[in-house]
Length: 496
Image (cartoon, rainbow, N blue to C red; front, side, top):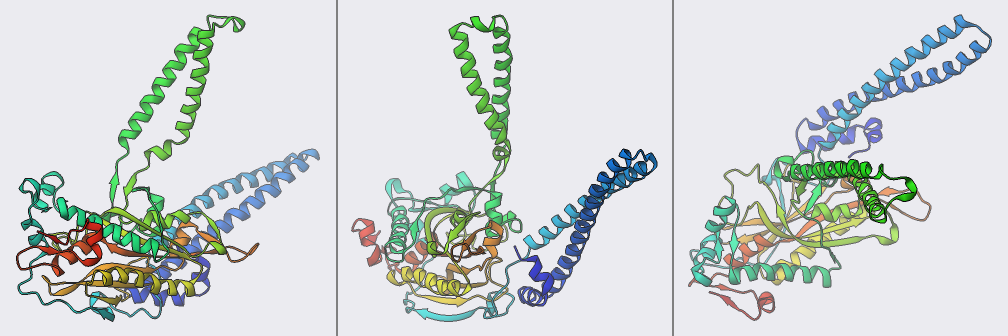
């Protein structure tokens, strides 16, 4: 989260930074933080003083009784009782204030760097450069029209929204034939560039994560409505059912055992007893992991979550940094705040594929250099596909909550006659590391420091597919395969 001591000692930079995010956010938030911090420290101090008084008077009680001074002993016992009441009351106030303080801190966005332009939405973003010239296409078709018109085996559309909707609802698609292969080709092409040329380590990660992982990267608690959760009630039922059966077997087995003297247990029953002991040990382990079983899991909204959490609760050595990871995974988002936006086609879906880039570095200086490097790595994919794009520096109001500085790459879409986001590369500072307790040691025996994290798309596969279809469309409805992808398509040069 944030260093409460830094806010307490010098609140002005925090007020100023959060006000740049949203007018009044810094003033309101810091006032609340300082109020709750004062309550928490007062309750902590009261509890500690009461504990000291209890301990001191408890020792004096023994001395008073040794002197047979019952009056003094009774007085001291009354003081100890009062101290215990204070400890309990102050402890409850301390816990309540700490929780409220953590809730406020957890819900606040990261502090934007001074170089980030101020603005309330995308209109405040600043274009930093362009690459490529948009192709002149007469009456360009939308990617959905192009994909649906192309037919594959059995007459199915290569881009089938209707079939997907029948089984899953809106914002899903089924790809067939060469369209599915093109999607796979794009992902493999991106991974090959990032791993063989840019030094990212390919990683296969879990698609289901616990809430702690999402808290670590900043999606929780503030953005829970954007996530898909998996109910663990079935796992709970199976766990308790198996536990009950084992306990019933336990009773039956020991009833049989009681019929025999300890030195005359038949070998068959002894084997059953040994087996049951092993079963009880498994049950014991299962009971210990009960909390683990009933916790809700979430489908990852991006592989940034598991990739960044690889360093969770770790202390790295300086020689290990920088770390660079990449993964190709499906991503799942509810798009809760996107009602009415991009409802047609593949621009904004509940399930999509993305090649993610994550870097772990030591400090801000290295982090800002890495941001430029990461953005260039994403740009290289677009350049080799010969897709026109521009780089945008996001303003404070359009930047993600966990970022301190962000570059968006926007690709040209002929059907919309505009640029649309295809990659977002962000420097997060130590914002995520504090939430994950991810540290490194600058040198042997030195005090540990929080690492700095970055993440970016290298690229969003579905949106890249959209860009390829629209920019490489032909008048007859066919799609020319970009030269860089022909080897990944088995030599296919045109999809028709």
